[in-house]
Length: 595
Image (cartoon, rainbow, N blue to C red; front, side, top):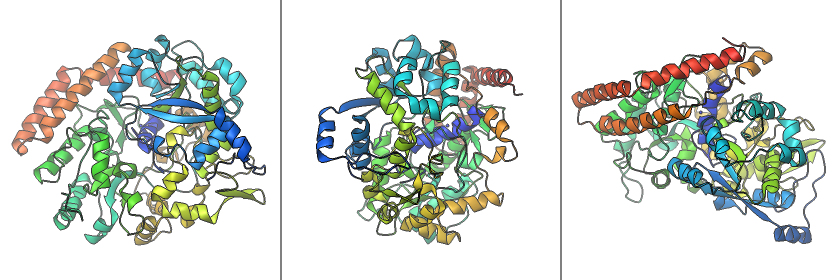
C-alpha cells in the first residue's frame, strides 16, 4: 500500500523516492492511478477468456497465499474478488490475502517465527534478522524451477540481491517491487505532496505555496470559511497519525526542503548529495521543519487534537469524512475522493516548495517493500509462482491495466485501452478501485513505465500521453486547466522543465546511462544490531520530545523545549549515529567505484 512512500546515493538516492511512494504508494490507484475472470493472455497473443468449467476447476485448487505487510490501512483485502484478482487466480491458481501489521506487531510476529507465506519488509533493515532467524528460505532452487520471468526480466536485481541482501550467504532471499531502470516520458498524476481540497483552495484564490508557512496560511483561510463539514463535524486544518514511526515528521516536509532519508529515519540528504545530516540535531532537517509547522498549527487552532495519539486508520476515517483540509498524499485522504467523484469536490496535490514527486529511476526497485518467502509457508512453490507472475510482463500489465479482452485489446499489434476503461479511470473512486487495476503498486514487481518488448508500450497503459489526457478525472481536468495544462501531471512537468521544481531524477540529467546505473546500484547502509538498537532508542526519544515541542504553550516554551530536545538528542548519540552512517555511505561508494 502506500506507506513509507524512501533518494539513495545511487541505490540510495532513489530509495528515498521509493520509500515515499511506496509508502507511500500504498493501496490506491497510486502514482499510476488506475475486468472479468478471464485469464490474461501474454502481450502480442490473442486473449482467451477462461471457460466457466476452467474457472470452476481452478477455484477448486485455489491456494490462498497470505502476505505480511507493514502497512495498516491497505485496500487489497477489500477488493480481493476484483477482476484483476480473479485473473491472477485463473492464471496461477492463487488468492492473495494481506496480513497487516504496524512496526510493533511486525516485530512481534518475527519474534514468534510463525509467519505468513510471503513477507514484505525493508531489506536493509530486516535481512539479518530474517535470515539468521531462519525465518525465510533461499529462493535459488525455486527460482530455477518457477522463476523464468524473474531471471529474464530483472537479472541485475537478482545478482545484486545475492551479493548484498543475503547476509553474506550469496543466496537469493529478497526481491523488491517496482523495478524500473528508466523513468517514463510523461508525468503521471502526482500522489505525494501538499494534498488539499481543490474546491476550497480555489475558493481562497489558489495562492502560491513556496513554504510550509505559506501552506499553513492557506489552510487557516480555508478553515475560517469552512469550520465544519456539511454534516456538522469540526474541520481541522492539519492532522497526522502515530503508528508509522517518525513518518509524519520526516516525509511531509520533503517537498519544501528537498531533503530525504534512505535506509534510516535518523539521517537525511539533499537530492543528489552524498552527505547526510542528522534528522534530530540539524535544525534544517525535515524533523525540525515539521516541528515548527505543527507547533504553529497548534498555536493557530488548526491542529487536530488527536494528532499525537491517533493511528492511521482513525486518521483515514477523519479524512474520509472531510475533516482535514491538507494532507501529505492523495492516498492519505481516505475515501473522500472516491465518495465525491461526481460533485467537483476532492483532494489533489498542488505544486509547491522545491520538489515534485514525479517519475523515478529504480533499477533496484523499492527496497523497503522487498518480498521474501517464509520458512512457515506450506506452499513455497506457489509463492514463487506468484512472485514470478508480478515480475512478468503479462502479470505486471494485468495488475496495472486490467484484463486483456476486457480492459484493453491488441489493435494492429499495439495494446490499447478500451473506452470503458478510460472512462472508468476518469470516473475514479470506488468503481476504479473495484477493478483492482493499480490497486497497490507495492505488489507489482515491474514499474509501470517499463516497456513490454513485444509491443513497445508501457506495462501501465494509463501512462501513455493519450490515456493521461483521456482518463483524467473531472477533478484532475479542472486542476490542469487552472494551470494551463491538459492533464494534472503536465502541470508539474512544465514546472520542472522551467527549472521551478526539481524531481527525483533532476540530479542525473547530465549523466550517461552507465553513470546513472552505477549511481543507482550502490548498496544501502545496513545497520548492525548495536546501531539498530541505538536507532530505535533515538526514534523513541524523538517521538517523546516531539509531543512536548508541538504542544508548547507559546514561542518561549517552544524554544525551551527545542533546546532541551537538541541537547537530549546529542547526549543520546544522534551525531555519532550520523557519523557512522556517513562513514558507511562513503565506504560503500568507494567499494562500488565511486567517490
